[in-house]
Image (cartoon, rainbow, N blue to C red; front, side):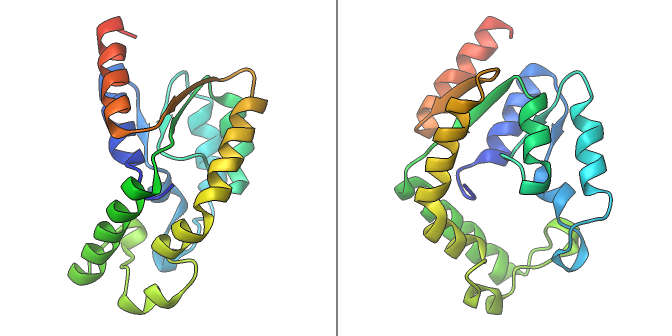
Amino acid sequence: MSGAGKTTAAGRLADVLGLPFHEMDALAIGPGWATPPTFVADVERIVREPGWIFDSWGPPDVRDTMWAAADTVVWLDYPRRVVLPRLLRRSLSRSWHREKIFGGNVELWRDWLSPVHPFWHAVTNFAARRAYLAERTARETHLRTVHLRTPAEFDTWLALVVGDGA
């Protein structure tokens, strides 16, 4: 879910493991919030590499490709009380400072009126996304799923990864 800390966590994990990290929104969102024409091909190329980390479960047009190529999913299944305040602070800050993000786009104040704004999308889709991920991780038997429910659990798990040298 947006606001869980996926990008930060994935970056930290990539550093520990020495694997390339790919920020999904940077690949999937171009100027004008449009999907770049090379997006699917870019993801297909990345997942053919021997090691990689994405910070996303994958948009629908690449999700099956990513999940089929992955060996591990780290699910940051944090509660609403953690995710929504983080997302609210981030989106407010981006709007206030007119921060350029993916594709040079800016979250504008008027964007808050849209039901697809990241904050409102998270509010309305939180339970459905959690249910989908529970079902999908159970179904994908080839995957090792690391199901973490708090930021502290992530930190503890990452320390174990560092300790294992894995």
